[in-house]
Image (cartoon, rainbow, N blue to C red; front, side):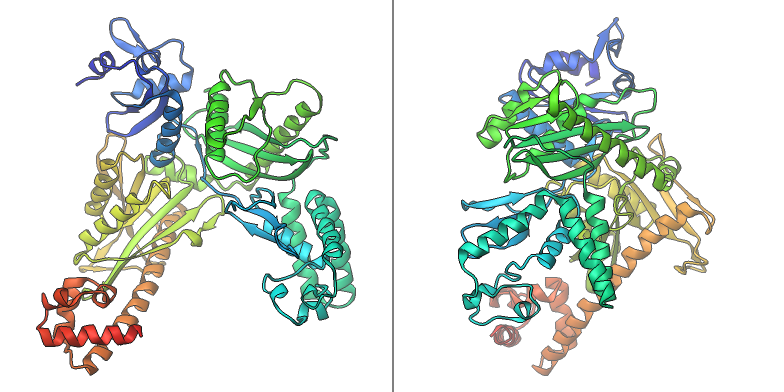
Length: 616
C-alpha cells in the first residue's frame, strides 16, 4: 500500500504516528488528538503528493524523505503524549529532538524521622514523611556532601548511632558522639540546620573549604589539602552563576534551552523556598538540522519537560518557568496533573524577578555551549558520521565481542563509549553468558538480549560489531525487526595467510558499513587514520573486557570440572552436560530428571548431591 492510500485510511482518533524512509528507517514520531487532521497537515495534494508549503525547512526536508506511514490508536491525547515519549526514547527517530541521556539524577536527602539525622545521597523516592530532599544534581553532589561532613560534625556513618561507644570520628573531632549521649537531640538539630545552610549557600561552603585547605597546607597535610582542592573545583564547576533569592518561599523549577550550530543544551534550575538549591543540564541531539533550518524550540521544551517529569520526583514545584511562549501548555499541565495529582503551572514570565531567573538560566545555556565548543571534541564524531554515512552523530557507542575456548565458557560483552564523558562509560559495561555454539549464533543471542533491554536502557547512536559483513547484516536484521533507528558498522581483522592479525601497530582492519542506498560496503583505512584508530579502540576495549570475563568464567568452570572429576564424573560426561545445559549455573539448578536426560541415574544423583552439598 502506497503513502497516498495510507493517508486516506487515517482514523479520526487520537494516536501516535510514525514516518519511514525508503530504507525502512524511522524518521519521526508524533502524536495527535485527531490523527487524520494532524498527519494530513504535513502534505498538499496537487494532485501529486508533496510536502505542505506551510512547513519549516527542516520538517519539509523530512516529509520529502517519507515513503510510508504507520500509526497507533489510543483512547485520548494524554495517552498519546505518554506513548509518543516512550517510543521516541526507545526508537530514537532521526528527526525528533532527543535528550542525550535519560537520567535519574541524585538528590541529597535528610530523614527527620531519625533521632540524629544525617545527609545522604539517593536516586530513589522514599514514601515516608518528614524526609527533606535537595537537588537534583547533575554533578558535584558527592563532593558537596563529603565537604559538608568535613566541616560540620554530623553523624558520619549510619551505624554510628547504633553503637554504644564513640569511634575514631569523635577522636578527630568530626562527630560529637550522640552514641554516648554527649549531645542532645536539640543541640544536634542546630548543627543540622548549620549543615543545610551550606547546601543553600554554596559560596559560603566554598569559602569554608578554602580556609580548611589553607589550614591543611600550613600543617603540611598536603594530601588532604589536594583532596579539598579537587572538591572545590568540582563544586565550582557544577555551580550555576546567579544571585537568585526571590525573597519568598516559592518552589519553582526553571527550564531554559539554547541552540547553536549542531548543538543545543537544556539547563534546569531548582528553587526551593525562593533560593537556588541545585541545577542540572543535558545536551540535546540536534545534528539533523542545518544552520539555515530553524531549531524547533517548541518540541525541545516539550521533550525536556516530559522526559524529566516522567521519573519519580520527590520535590514538585508550584510553577515551571520556561524561556519561550509555548502554543499549548495545557496538554503539558494536564500530563503533570495526571502524573502527580497536583496542579503545576507552566509559565513564560514577562516581567520582574521571575523573568530575570529565566534569563540567568538562558545565560548559563550560552556559557555551556561556549565551553563545549571550545573543547573541539566533536570533530571525530562528525568525521565518523560522514565517513560511515551515519544518520546521527555517534555520541553514545556500544561495541560487542564474544569469546570461548572449544565451546567452553562461552561469553559475550558490550562496552560503551560516552561523548559526554569523553571516555568509556564503565558503569554501563555488560557481560553475557551465552548458550549458542557458533560465533554467528552467539552474536545473534547477545544482540537480541540487548535489543530486548531497549525499553529500560534505550538504544545508543551506534553499534560496532567485531566481525565482517555477515555479522553486520545480522545486526541490521535484528534492529530493523523491532523498528529501532540505529546505525551499525563492523570491523574485521584483515587475514594474512588465513590468520587474523590484531596487533595495534600493524593491524589493517576492514570496516563494513551500509551506504545511503542501503548497500553494504567496506574499505581499508591507513593505520594512522584517527577515525580507524577510534573504532579500533572501541573494538580492542570490547575484546579486552570479554577476554577477562572469559578467563574468569573458565577458571570457575575448570575448578568445577576438577571437583566433579574427584567425585568420579569424567571429562566426557562433563562436556555432555555443558553441551546440554550451556553453563555450570544451569547444571547446579537442574532437577534429577533433567540430569537424567544426559547421564545415567547414578551419575545424575552424584551431581545433584554434590551441588546440594556445595550450597550448604
